[in-house]
Image (cartoon, rainbow, N blue to C red; front, side):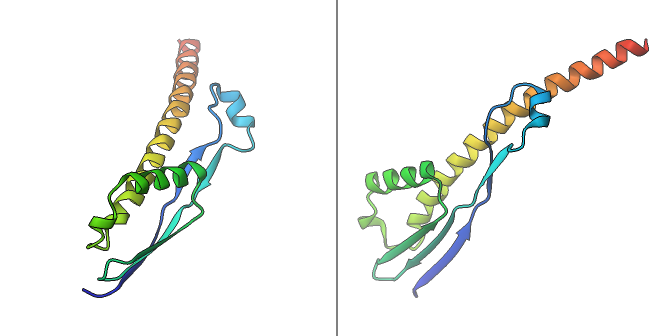
Length: 125
């Protein structure tokens, strides 16, 4: 096997605040933030690995550090992708948090929209 190097990046759109009613949502200037973590990983067949993390939010950085400290990486560095598992798993956790935050906002908008549609329908009848 030869030396391996890879760069990958994720884009995660996360709401800044949990808005519960539609009029405030329309007036809000800042509705979301982008997380754009990037990773460069290099590995040699001798088991030497270097990983650089760019633009990682604090919550992701802390999770990656915690995971690498609790995982037995020294014995498992015979493959270039062992560290990728940790990076991707922790990034998926951040994606998951973002998706559920959007779910709450969208559900609140659905409730308002459905109520508006129901009111306009009753006015026509």
